[in-house]
Image 1 (tube, rainbow, N blue to C red):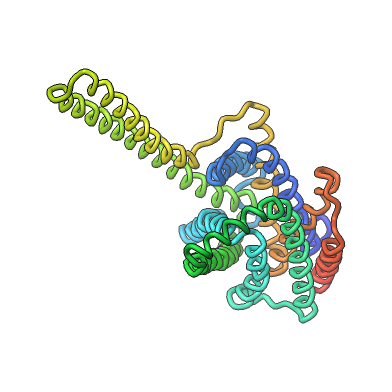
Image 2 (cartoon, rainbow, N blue to C red; image 1 turned 90 degrees about the vertical axis):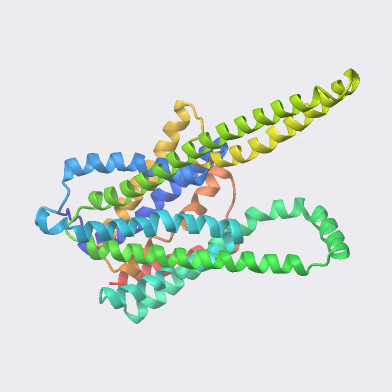
Amino acid sequence: MTVVVFSPTADGVIAALLAPLFMSIGFFIWDVRWTASGGSAFALNMYKCFTASIGFVIMCGIRGFSQSNADGAEVFTSSSVGFLLLSSTLGIIIGDVLWLEALRLIGAKHVIVIDSIKPFAAAILGRFFLQETLKLVAWGGMILTVLGIGVVSWEEQTRAAKPEEDSETNTAQVESTQQMVMEGHTEDRVDRNKRYRRGYTCAVFNVLADSFGSLLTKQHGVGMTTWTINLIRFGFAGIILFSISCGMRVHRKYCSTAEEQCLQIKNENRDTEATAHIDESTRVEERSQRTKDVNREETETIIPCQSCKWYQLPPLHLKGWLQITAGVALVTFLCPAFEKFALFQITLALAISLSSVGPLYGLLMDWPFKGKKPTLPSCFGACMAIGGVVVLSVFGT
């Protein structure tokens, strides 16, 4: 049976607001430790899915797999579990990949703009599939919240990018001038347009995949505990990501063996051809040149192997793994647990809107931990978002 502290609606609002707080603290830990380790986003996603699943298994053993007033045989059907697996595929596997690809192609500032439509997409999906309606005042609060969060995020990204832009201004001006003189800038414009089209497409599909994944969770997770829902979603994602990692390890090992054999055959053939036709001095020079060629070929074959290590966990000491695990406990254990709890207490649009206030918490933590004082636009955006949250909390249900 679900424990009610204040009321189902109040508990849902509080849970939706606490979820991004846990995520912001966890991201701060990851930013310090995982970035320094050189680990990839794929490896972090795989590790956090597996580690969080262990916690979900423990909580399912304590709290049970289904609500006490629900029949387990009716709750855990092939249809409900199958749709939760689809939700995991859309929201965790595909959604995260598209989000990271969009960040790479168009940058965080543009992704933030696209992410701002997620609450509205959730409101539309909730209206058509769940028959959930929002009051007109709640729509105003949602717009105010999204605008405030957008202002804060945009300002923070601008501040983060400014030093890098200043340090590269002279070099960029020289390079751009030379390129315009030699080649013109038509090809650059075409490549940039292609990159932006791909980036915006990835960002839009990420919003749709994430919103639709939340819809499937709310539709087919009825009767399950929040721990069970997250165990199914993150456990399945962890298995898929681990399978990809194992497949890439086998592929890399096979490719490395084939490359070594190919290089050995080339060296033997060169030795055989050289012995009968050249004198001693020429042979020494030929061997020197052949050594340079072999070294160059080995270097070329090592570069792709190093780039394939995105699927491997980075080497860290025990202290580093403990810090990463602490971040997992916040981002992938507590945050989704509170999010899924809120999803079944309040409307889909309200839950997603309130869960998007993470940049506000990040703004608060930047000052004491990083010494970055908030700017006036950031404070203005934060006030807008807080006002929207208040309106949503009072009139959004």
